[in-house]
Image 1 (cartoon, rainbow, N blue to C red):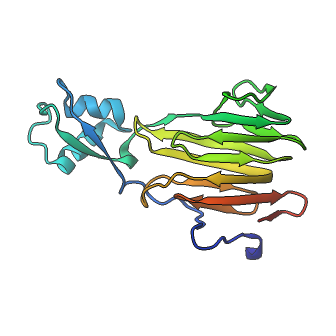
Image 2: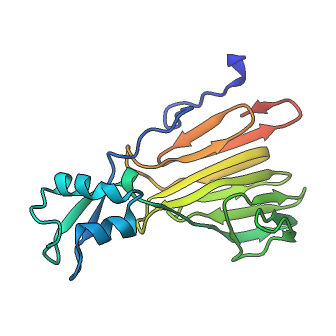
Length: 212
């Protein structure tokens, strides 16, 4: 069974569980009228995190923050907001099936795809997608790709991209990310790839259940 899982070398590493993102931080610039409570309500996942924010930044008075002050906020505390990927180039036949409506439509350049959507290419088709952090993916002919998770950490440029290649081939150009930050992941039925910045190719043959 273990032989079915693919190991890629050097710059590409595989994990079955995500590494914590708490070591990566966002610097928030305090604006006039800010206090720890409204910052916590606007950006953090839990209201009681204001005490952690106070301790981390050694804030004496949570009601009075000097404008221009920089607050350190761990990425793991930030709300995740949905984001999208943009189709930047299409050649030949390709389709998108929307998770929201269930409709399948032809792909056009400029189309936005969301979490849960499926992109499929025909025998003569290929599609280029660009994600929120500038990473790009070329989906080649006779391929099926699901957008499992497309989200961002609050208003930052930290993007969580998790995809599922059910069939076919893809090539990725992944924007470099900090070691502790969110990763760019592609899963297949037999393997999982997680990278923080590299260029690589991945192929899934559904007939033989082999990932290359």
